[in-house]
Image (cartoon, rainbow, N blue to C red; front, side):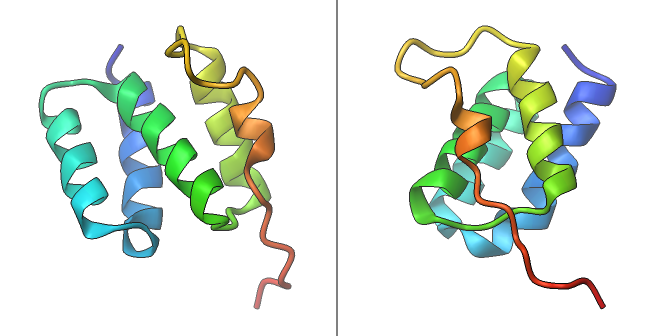
Length: 92
């Protein structure tokens, strides 16, 4: 599971890394190094949901696609991507 999937995961991590705990960002980046793309996508989505950080509608769709392409860990709700908040502020 590399290539496009990995690129999307890295793009999302880069975009939201300044909004989540630095220790979690380090852990997610370490998982990237060893190719644990599915865990990074899952854990990043969890972190954004847990902290109430809003994402763009496009990023929510990306998370939905990424998470639907993997077998989710047993403790992950199947609707995790749908729980992401969407930023409703107008784009300038």
